[in-house]
Amino acid sequence: MEDEIRLFIEYLQIEKNSSSHTVINYQKDIGDFVVFMKQQGLDQFAAVSYVHVRHYLTILHEKKFARNSVARKISSLRSLYRFLLREDLVPQNPFQMTSLPRKTERLPKFFYQEEVEELFKVSDLHTPLGQRNQTLLEFLYGTGIRVSECCDLNVQDIDTTIETILVRGKGRKERYVPIGVYALEALDRYLKDGRQALMKSQTHNKLFVNYKGDPLTTRGVRKVLQKIIKSTSLTMKITPHMMRHTFATHLLNEGADLRAVQELLGHAQLSSTQVYTHVTKDRLQQLYRSYHPRA
Image 1 (tube, rainbow, N blue to C red):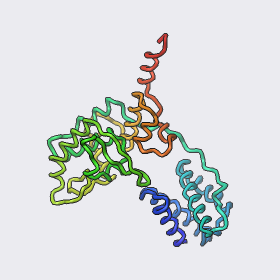
Image 2: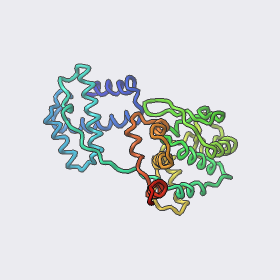
Image 3: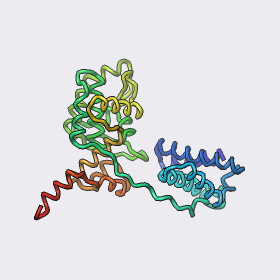
Image 4: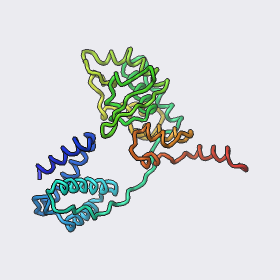
């Protein structure tokens, strides 16, 4: 089975151009299923039947996996078998007839404008780390890029002349995203002062660095945001993705076109962007009072 898994991973990386994060998720889902197969005395993918699939789903249900997690596992294994079937390595796809459990729809968590302003007040702009933190906040909120995309930014990806950044998204797709004046101001301060101080003897081109001058990781970004919110009066948790949610929500609440927001976020499907079309109570009341004839 190891050779078949290796071929599938190469297919994801080369033909599908999948991101490293996607590949890791596939490997985990397949690895969990291989453990189940060994428990059932199965030593090859071709030996798996629909009965085995139903048994596996029962076990996932008994372990109380969330519906979204089960749906992802089925999708991963269905893709694996679709590939193996294409390569004539299995006689059938036992996951083909398995229906995906309906995903739990949850509204994305986001910050209100007043809460965002709180976040921007805490960084000490006279210190290198404070300058970096402020720039990081401005980029996450001002561009809506993913945390992985943010950590992947190089200094040369920033074009201050036309006020855009080159972002490498999922599937290595590239897109240009505009940046605003606040982000540009923070960036200029950080590049001229803070980043140089943090870099020390380092020579790489990554835009965001840690206190040692090494490239900032996604885990490092999460720690920075947690430290920032602890310095405010806010009580909620914060994640990099919440800043992305906030970016999209604020744009749509102010009347931005859904297709434009889709492009800014780098979503392949419009349905991924539509989750942000919820509106805040304040915005609902504002719309009602502005447009209803008897408001």
